[in-house]
Length: 451
Ligand code: TYD
Ligand code: MG
Image (cartoon, rainbow, N blue to C red; front, side):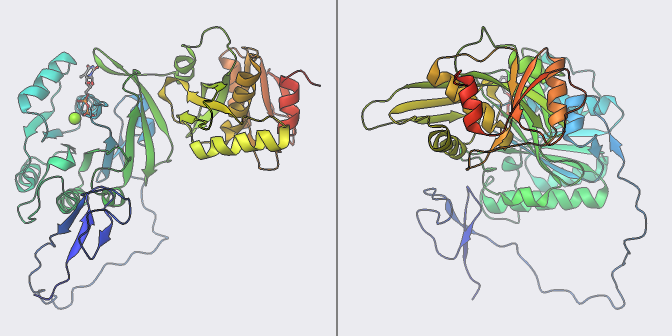
């Protein structure tokens, strides 16, 4: 009576006061549902004299104890191991390998002495057992439960007192106090809230698995991202065997750290030297191919950037990007035109980061530009050369962070030359020939032999 109705979008989680066929926030159709608020009884009066315990900042708190899985790629993404009493969300497209990753990780943690419970709401216990058999994990002392009712799950966790609980997936869990269907915003939000607060209270680490929609949001509630301590995304291209676990938020470690895995017939195998893997598919140097010396989190990773330029059909030029930002590509094309006199008008441009990697660093600007120049001029870059640097709108090249790390990794992988922005001081410790360029025009002229 008298309470205001609230409607929310099952894709982006935005709320609005009226129902509509289309979400006002993300534009998705048929995704607005009424939110049923949690039943709240009349508030009990506070017990007299109950107070909050206050702590000052000077009291030294020991760093949270961590348990390592013994899988370096996973431990690094977690910020050095699993933290007790923390909540982790692992998101990713259906079928990308989340359940496989977590089953393998759970088995490793269990072998290292952690008490682990894996709750599957998506597959039957039999299906998970079969997968464990195929992955050779049947010796692991972890426990398995097939359940979707959160009340049962919490009771089990309460009784068993595990140190790690994996909930696969949060979209299949439901609370009987919430009226909407499993997978709806209200259910997912309520279930995630119950599980995360239980984790904090009981000192259990919980991992919530969440499916991601085409738009890239954890289906339904983005809000889950705010409730947890750590958000990891498991990404990759289904056509490739590489999978990347990326920390997009981490209260206990650096964000942007990545771990690289390979999906094989026997599950996920960690890739200790990703650069070698990303470059392994490279054939003879072709026009349009450039090796970019990038940094992901704290680690240098080399990868190949490929560009293809072809005449466009009249009136419809295409710009297609895989693994990089489309807006950034448009900017590089404009700067090439305005500052280096290289026009791509009337040409289709395709840009691809090989191996299914997704790059967000502006440091890739120069590598992208050189790939475009090389593709258009049909002149291949020397195969022993790496490229990195940020391009500003003025056409100037800006030095980027961790230059020395990038050079060191390039040298380790057998490269001999680097094209990079002019450095303020000499980069120490690399045996590479440095071809420092003050601006894009100079870099382009050198590549085209116009010096
Ligand atoms: P899965 O872990 O079920 O994905 P998610 O939980 O993210 O939906 O992974 C399913 C895919 O992984 C499936 O297409 C088959 C593939 N796969 C392998 O290639 N090798 C393996 O050993 C396993 C277990 C799965
Ligand atoms: Mg799964």
